[in-house]
Amino acid sequence: MKRMMILALLALGAPAIGSELVYQPVNPNFGGNPLNGSHLLGNAQAQNDYKDPEASSSGYERPSDLERLTSSLQSRLLSQLLADVGAGNEGSIVTEDFAINIVDNQGILSIIIEDVNTGEITQIEVDGLVPDSF
Image 1 (tube, rainbow, N blue to C red):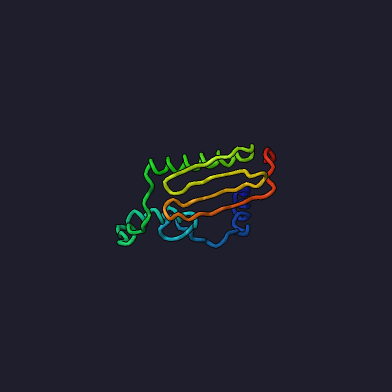
Image 2: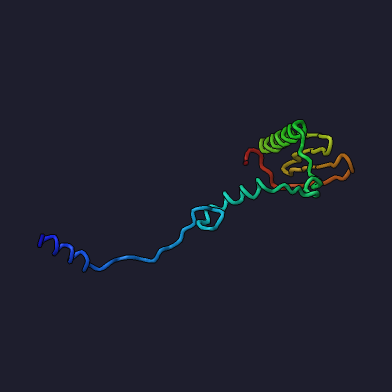
């Protein structure tokens, strides 16, 4: 019994250690961790039923699959044509918008681009072309 009394007095005499209580909100709607921002944005977008009347009149129209295929094919053919110039080959490509004619004139590379719609012609000349040096 004496032993119990001594232990109780020692326990009561020991200093208490503690710190301030810090409130940490659990519900992300009331602040707290900034990583909850995506949750709050998702909730706000789910509740937003306002539609901007000018949003549909942006003027951009998604190209059709045929237009994308045509554009991709034109890019591929033009790339192949320019790659063949390095081997000393000449060539031309004609589309509905432009015509490109590439001529190697004794070391001077002439690229003639004609706008089919307006008839405007642009000529680019590169001097010192050595075939197979690309």
